[in-house]
Amino acid sequence: MGTGSKKKKTVSWCTTEVSEGTHAFKIVGYSLNKGIGVGTFIRSGTFAVGGHDWAIRLYPDGVTEDSMDYVSVYLELMTENAKAMAFYTLGLVDPPFRAKIPLFIPRSDLEMEESGYIVNDRLTVECEVTVTKGPQVSRTIGCSEIGVPPSELSEHFGKLLEEEEDVGRDVVFSVEGESFAAHKLVLAARSPVFKAEFYGEMIERGTFSIDIKDMQPSVFRALLHFIYTDVLPADIGDLEGDDYVEFIRHLLVAADRYAMDRLKLMCQSILGKYVDVKNVATTLALADQHNCDKLKDVCIQYISSLDEVDAMFRTKGYANLKRSCPSVLADLFEKTSKFRAS
Image 1 (cartoon, rainbow, N blue to C red):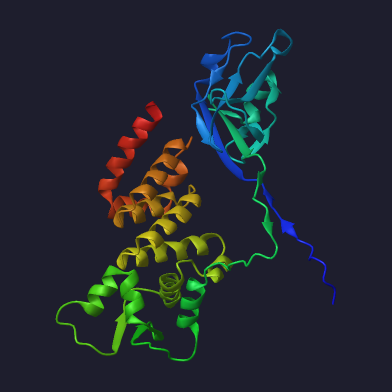
Image 2 (cartoon, rainbow, N blue to C red; image 1 turned 90 degrees about the vertical axis):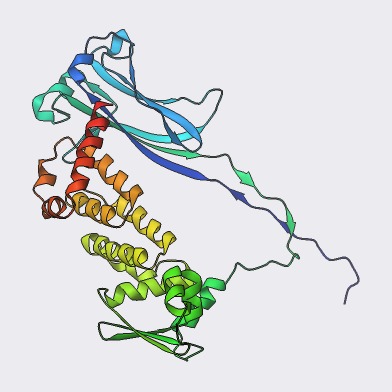
């Protein structure tokens, strides 16, 4: 065996962080802005992406004399004395189909009635921005350093719930004929409702058997999985479209029922991303019934941004909203009026 010194190996990493965002700029009364002059622009409100402020510039009469017959759109970095590396797409949006046209278009083509890009004298510009931060290089470490694996706590707790072997389970739930065994201590640590149910005054100690009403087994299974692991079950990703949205609605109700605040916020976040004309009224009613103020604001802002609300008025969700939550309608019309006025 040789006596020479060992070769030292080192390693470092280079990573690049990416931030993405989309902003829609709606020009109400587009015709009133024609003729403001070559090189004169309309600027959107600022929006933040990647730690920088941005704005959209629209030149109704073109940027220069050579382009005076064209409508031009540009992205502007508003943060003072800042440099940013960004990739972006800018275009004029056709609301019914969300098809984009280029950011440099002959005015005659744009203003043709059959083009569909100007509806009720309103023009919408959409910008998708991707901002990359400069390469981040880690410190150099020796390969001989002993690495520490990530925490496996949630994985271990998940196995505690899923293993067939009965390890300390002391409560059994019955949900529509399906049984779920769990650990009172774990549930009580995660939910104040379970804590009061299991360890409140005058509660007899021992094994519990509890019948859960008004909840689907699949929803209760997802609730238990989150309680033990702090993440949503992977298999709910197999659901698609309306089925996925409906499941998340039920899970939000369960989270509210058991005071699982983080899960409730996660469900609000997901539902907010899936809001559309067909479901916004149903989602708004759900948000009002379960005190989801953030989701409620998302729904109201979405409705305020609609060019035409007749399609929403024709949905069953809107009929149910009028019947079950009449007070929220007054709030809706008040806030949408303020939003449109601004």
